[in-house]
Image (cartoon, rainbow, N blue to C red; front, side, top):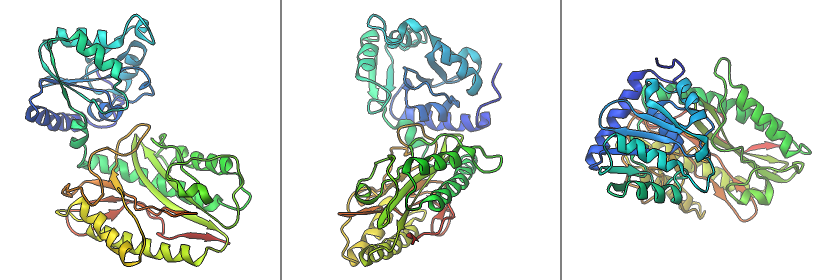
Length: 394
């Protein structure tokens, strides 16, 4: 018996598994154990808030993937995964937060039973969800196996989106438009920031029409004034004030797919310096989008933007974008290619990025960003239809 709740048709998951197995073969791997919730969902459809305990996906060179996790979450696997129920397995609660047992002991028994006691097994060493203790126990239990760092092996297979995935991202973009419009409309002097964020979250979860909103992988980032000189602050209960810029870094989410967008609101009359930098930023974004063409590199997008900044005498360094799509907390980026001057990743049709050339100045911040889709021909398509400008509310 299989579930009918997986987000995509079985053929879509089979396509993904074929790509992953080709990468495994190139790396000389017999099996991989995947803990990143985004990669788990991409391969199996599993969708549950259970990534605070040990869980993952075993993928070998044949057969269906195996989802492995806590026994009570195994039931969620049966509701969301596309595989046969015998390939959704669980371990007992006596392994949870125990000083005597560890879930990796159970995982090792399953790998041994499938003939990988001496296999070459890939694991995601640089991942939020694979702990040092987990690796130590697993390698101790499988002392004759060879463990290979397979960090981002699955992530790189996700870089080019299928038509079905792009359809989900477009739905997320429609929700992003609603969320951002709500933020801009509700931002007024005297409005408490937490009340504004409550409206943002309501817009996000209520969605658009029949396209319901999922929880985004990052909470609303809404700093004002001096707080907006920092990139990743959230909110408090302080009323919004005249003479301050507030940037909103937000994303709608549909079936775990994202379409981030940032816009900045200034309450009152912005100083000339803010308007000067805004004009340069918009010019730079336009240049970057024009460079976002199939056959170019991610670095071409970054360099096009930086050339405009240099022309206007504005200092900017570092990364200014990343691939997006399916994701879970704490990040909606895919952690592969980057839009930065030293990245040589070739742009291909179907890639989706959050192009984020934000500017954090000494006393204020300005974020104007776009989710973009690389086209077969011509410049990238921006997926969110929100005017690209500083929103001034006197």
